[in-house]
Length: 149
Image (cartoon, rainbow, N blue to C red):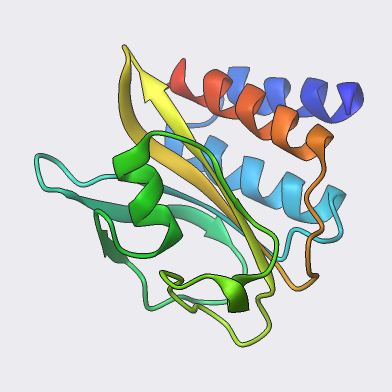
C-alpha cells in the first residue's frame, strides 16, 4: 500500500494538472491497482443544496448524477459524516442500484475545515471484498484530497 500511496500523492501534488484531472487520475489508478474496485468516483456537495453531485469517476456510466442527502449509501454518508461499508448491497434497504453487477460498496467522506464536502464511492462486483487496509488507504486519500480542494 505504501507504493500506491506514493503514486497517489504524486498525482495529487502534480503542478501539471487541475483538480478535476487529478481526481480522475486517482480514480484510474485505484481502478487499475485494486482488482475488486469496479467503479470508483467522487461525489461533492452541490453548492448550498442538500444533495451530492457526481464528480470524476471511472467505471460504467451512472444515472446517479445528483443524489439527495439521505438517499442511498452516498446520501446517508452525506448526513452521518461516517464511512459506510456495505459487504452485500442486496441486504441493504437504502441502496441505490447503479449496476446489476455491483455486490458491495464503500463510501468514505471528505472533510475540509470540519465540513463534509464530498466523498469517494467505490463499488465492487465481489461480495465483502473491502479490507482494513482498503479503509485506511481511502481515509488517508480523502484527507489528502481535501488539501487540494
